[in-house]
Length: 287
Ligand code: AMP
Image (cartoon, rainbow, N blue to C red; front, side, top):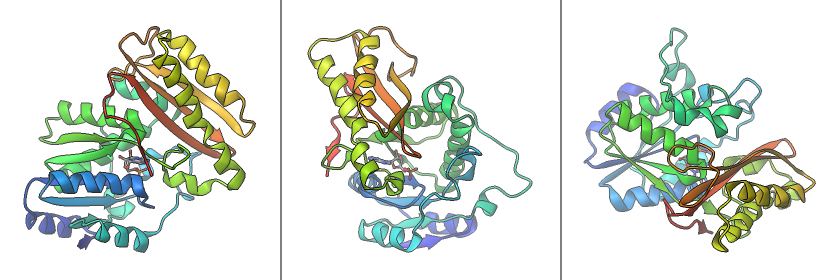
C-alpha cells in the first residue's frame, strides 16, 4: 500500500495504478462502515484508493473539529489489511493554504436537513470532494447511505461539474442493536451508548407504520418523535420525512420517503436515516 502526504507524490503514485480506480474518501478513525465501502470498491474496481482527512471547512465554529477522534497508524493498518492500494493523508495547510479562496456550493439539495442545521457544512464537503476527485481522477467513488444528504449532494456535484465519476452509495452498517456505526460513537459513555439505540428504534417504528400502510408523512414524523421522546438522554434537533431525490419535506409518502433525524445524546450529535418505499440502496447491513 502506498501512503502519500503531498499532492505531487499522490499524483505520481496514482499514475501507476490501473483503471478503473475506486476512491473511498474518509475522515479517518475507521470502522466497519468505512471498510464496507472499501470492500465494495475492491469488488468493482481494479485498484482502490482512500483518503484520510479531517476536513476543517465542513465543521462549524461550535463543532467538534479539535476533538474529532484520530488514529492514523490504526487506520493505515486497517486499510492495508482491507487491500487498499493507495492512501492520501494531506495536511490541512496543504489543502487550504492561507491564500485559499475557492469554494464549491451545491444549492438546493444542500439547503435543508443537515445543511440547515450546519451552515457551510456542505460547502466544505463539496469543495473537498471536488479537490479529491481532481487529485485522484477516480472512475468510481464510494459513499455511505448513513450520510444520505451528503450522497445526494455529491451525486449532484458530479453531474453538474461533469466529473466522469460514478457515485456509488453503499448501505449503512449497523451494530447488532441497530446503532449506525460512526466515528462519533466513540464520544458516548455507556449510558449514552445504550440511549443511542433510540434513533434506529424510532426509524424502525416509522418503517413498520409504513409497512402497515401509513402514507401520511406527518404521522410518520410523529411516530419517530414519540419514540425519541421516551428517551430522557435524547434531545431531538430534527425529524424529517423527505423526498429521497429532491430532499424536500413531503406531505404524502405514497411512493417513498427518506426518514431521517439528528439527535443529541448528551453532547454528541448523531444522525441516521432509512428509506421506505422504493429502496434506493437496499437493506442496512448488521454486524
Ligand atoms: P466519514 O469518515 O464519517 O466522513 O465517513 C466516510 C464515508 O463513510 C462516508 O461516505 C460515510 O457516509 C461512510 N460511512 C460512515 N459511517 C457509515 C456506516 N455506518 N455505514 C456505511 N457507510 C458509512
